[in-house]
Length: 186
Image (cartoon, rainbow, N blue to C red; front, side):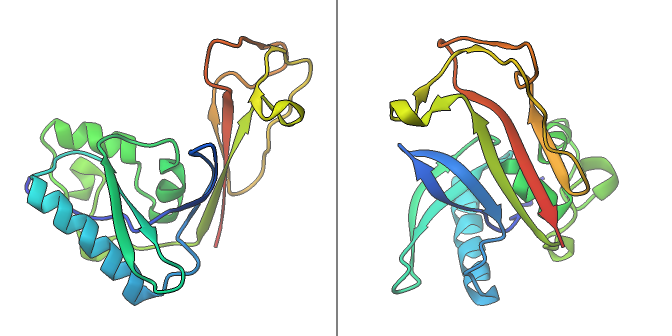
């Protein structure tokens, strides 16, 4: 072990009440130098902390100066990890389990994660969250029975969810997230 790699960046600018709504990868406004600078900060933080496992290092970027400001480290797989999986081709959940079981980063067959120099960005991905929030009631979670539901389909479309189907009963006691739609294109 002891190897830390980055999987580039995601942009999670579109938020409502501190909840991410739209996520994309890679961030379209970063050039390669900024991308490497940002990734370098994330790797340095992980190295300094002796971090092990999948995680997300969050930063804010000042649009006027281009400077990055550290926010926090989330030591878990986040909801928006799917956009990173789509543009890197790495199954983050599977890799995390394999690495925790002893597989090494760089041994692609064992861990699913190549060495840093072999991790590439491929295309662009966008994730949108399908929720039961009611826009006419200040986006409070809505509830009831879904009478009809048809998920997105087609090349480059990934659906992650479990409660978005015709006949599903949605209660007010849980998060209103029904499904995530992730679209990828070259």
